[in-house]
Image 1 (cartoon, rainbow, N blue to C red):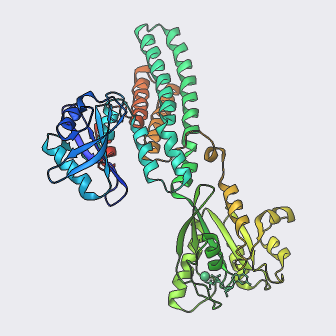
Image 2: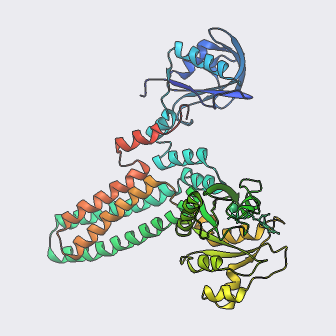
Image 3: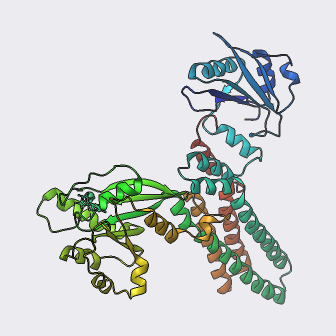
Length: 459
Ligand SMILES: Nc1nc2c(ncn2[C@@H]2O[C@H](COP(=O)(O)OP(=O)(O)OP(=O)(O)O)[C@@H](O)[C@H]2O)c(=O)[nH]1
Ligand SMILES: [Mg+2]
């Protein structure tokens, strides 16, 4: 790998103001000197300076900029040259083809980042942080990716690995001097240390719940009997007319899902069919899905028509709210209030204060929905979400850390059951390796290859 010089277009294909072609490897400067001319000869380029010159391709000449990053101070850690040419697929492609004909080879998906990893510029989780930032759909995802890129997870894991290394070393010493009292003393110390590592690991793994919210968004379902204004509220929350609204009961027949962002967080809004007794085959299937939504949503918005008295259908829905987060939306608040709120709170078995905390007056017609968004945000917002700490957003990291935790638990059990210390060591080493699979310092080749294949060409 070290001997080849790779090249690829680093910007998206298609027309735009500028395209960037990136070349990395020991021959970068030499190859560039054969095709790029400017006042300063390429071989004398100062690192990190922009040079304006002419790139001579097979079929055209292009006035463009070149910048040189000298090894090891580049993204990959190798000599890198980047050409900033006019946007458009054909120009960048012509530049790549010319560089290929002068000895560079086409980069594989993720190969620049893989070289950065191999050259110690990035750990695996940092590289994944870059990918998370690239693919982010919300600010919270960008923030989480950035924390990874900054090495927050890496340093947490390295410090746990260091503790394990010290522990393993002290066990080795006690095994070399197998007098009974040293062994006993070591065993107690190891138990304490493993317990403390397990509690740090639990703290870290706890953040996966916030991580799920960041990655997948918060699922919010609008449920209620027909015509209470669920679809109207969905449209008001989204800020555009996504769902069909009519005054006919049973307008919405299938689940409609759409995302919206609020304070940098992704919310997935689910509109459902109005719940009632129906003989219509299609509507019945829709209503079945509405009942399901009650259980899988992270937060329920139970929508009632405040301008009408409660009906049997409203009561049916209220009685089936599972015991998790929900709000009662008294909608159509622009009309005179006719609903019996005392009855609602008694069905929900809530005292006055708790009921008021759950109840919101809304008007979809007046697009009065800001308070709903803020309440939803307050429910999910945690220190993890707003803080600068590590949050586990990546399934792979979670899997590795759960493996590491299991090995620690096995080690603890072995210690408590008076197993020999060399058996304990096997599990402690497994735990160290599972942690190392997160950052790449376990040198697990399969994991490394799999990760970089997910990157795009040019990254
Ligand atoms: N005055 C008033 N009318 C509203 C409000 N929200 C909805 N409506 C009206 O109520 C009727 C039903 O609205 P939808 O949003 O279709 O109700 P839904 O709950 O989605 O109904 P289904 O899809 O049948 O379950 C429409 O005529 C809306 O214009 C509101 O806040 N105030
Ligand atoms: Mg509807």
